[in-house]
Image: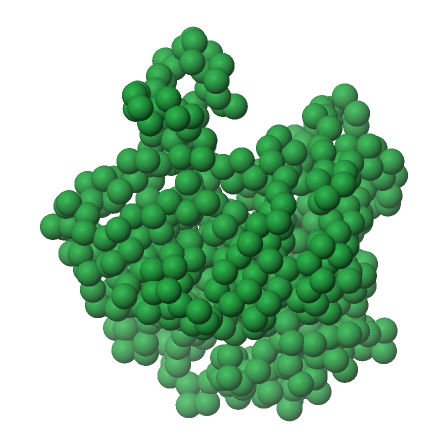
Length: 575
């Protein structure tokens, strides 16, 4: 049985493919179209389905859309429609905002358009595909697969619990919004989830963080991770304010006061204005209170469920500082966070949820031990492109050893190997790598990537050596938690130590990615340091590279020193 999962409602459009419960492929649309996040989360973009992602997933299995049994779409529009629309399925769309009387019935006057696009997604799938993708879509009308609308937060929860290593767990989802819910609490057992509570709009920790992201001059639904980084430079000057804004109630409920940040904190920062200590302090204060409040919710959830395991998903679960606080100060013994916790991961969750129900499965079908589910290109395809593009290259005899030698000389490399990562973190398939030994490396990398100066860079470390270099470090393959750098090691790896003394680590073992692991081993043999700087292979505002062409274009238009792409080395002249 083949099941396709689709996320297309807000942002980070994506698709995945399961066969009898086993994940075959998963990818974000941005990686294939070069449009960051796939699209912007506005009502007028909801018609855009992740056709390129679906095409890729079908190609992995060598099948056509007609071969699919079930399609799971990670949003249920019928949760937002009154019964009267089912009896007389016509809604009014305003020509100008607020001009249609029925607009008053909706949270947003454009919701009728938004919902109409979603409801008609099955027809759009068979009619609206790009011409160049017709090989896997043409002839699929009428749609043979059974279509399922899956609640957004069920999709998040299933993405967290079903691929986790736990048979039983409490499940917490935190994001901006779903249909109505913004936060949900579930108990996961076998292949089932039981909802025990939720928080609904307009109260949303995710939307509050988005609001502050915009206030600080960043792009909301995109740059929230920058606010997290900015927070490390601040002081808790406005903690009282945010404690007033976020109020915890009983039974896992909370309220968000409808705030105008400009009235409370002063004029909003424009995008290209300098950051001041005032901005740092605002970001820091929200981060601190977010951690406090979520810990209160987590404490309630553990008392309510009596579980020792916690699974998390939703955009807020990408806040690795928050995750570490829950790990270190929370009541749960074990925590697993979905590596594609943002909306991209709901494609996976919706597919797993429907697959389990339709197959009547009573046990878990797979455990997500890595995130390498995207496109890959073998040496033959890479060399063919390099020759066609007339790019000079050298074939390496020992990729790990020769790359480690380049890195030991403080060179910055693009690293392009195997299937690309699913989710926002580069995990060693589409990475920029460098030595962590030079204290200037963080600044150099931010210059190379045209990033803000305050942005940290993260380390990858051999799993067996992690605890020696980072406090309380354990298995952490997805860069979703921070750990303090051990003081006695701080001078050895200054480039990856953030201003607050932490690092967002990725651990790697040989089973997850053999070549990546061997590179770390070779670098350790040369330098005594089992750590490399690992940041995503892209530049500011661009998605992570996917194809060999993407890698070559990024390499030649950026001040990297070398590119290791498959077995091939491409170098620039060094002074």
